[in-house]
Image 1: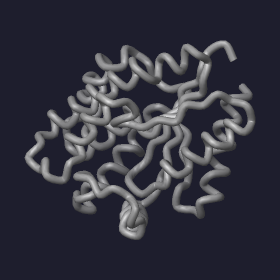
Image 2: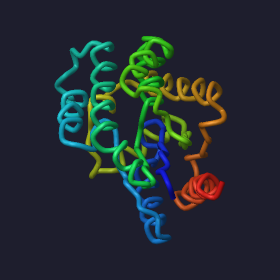
Image 3: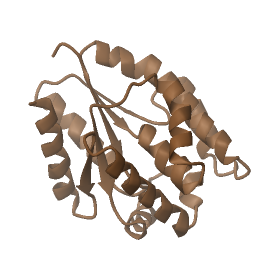
Length: 210
């Protein structure tokens, strides 16, 4: 592999994307691929510090534009410090969330505007978009129920939002998926874990073998 492949995993809270990402990374490594599994916001020290500020349940006064800018700042640092070097080294980068999260959460659900939030991120990413995005689609009621059952999961500021907010997040993802059909592959995340994994694996194998 002369250059790496950048794949992002997206979806509402409780969609199971983080668990599936870990399974995908382990399987690809067994098959001989050099894999970097990472997340947003976070993945490297500076971005993890920004993550703590964004997701702190105490920060209820955070303005939506501040939130969008902090995500973009964490994204920039993560890209420059971790993602770009990994891709240059020919690795497969699997990233839990990327620009589409900002478009769905801040752009649509917060009402800032998808195009407006995309413009903030254009400056941050310098046209660097993933080769493919897997969008894990699930009804917010199911996602929130899963979160409630997962006692080991961190409870962050976004988890505390009302159902209406999470419904808008899903609506935002639907709009984005329609806008970028060549990049975004929809996964039915309402199914059992193994069935969801097989959907995701098939999409990634299709990309790697193309």
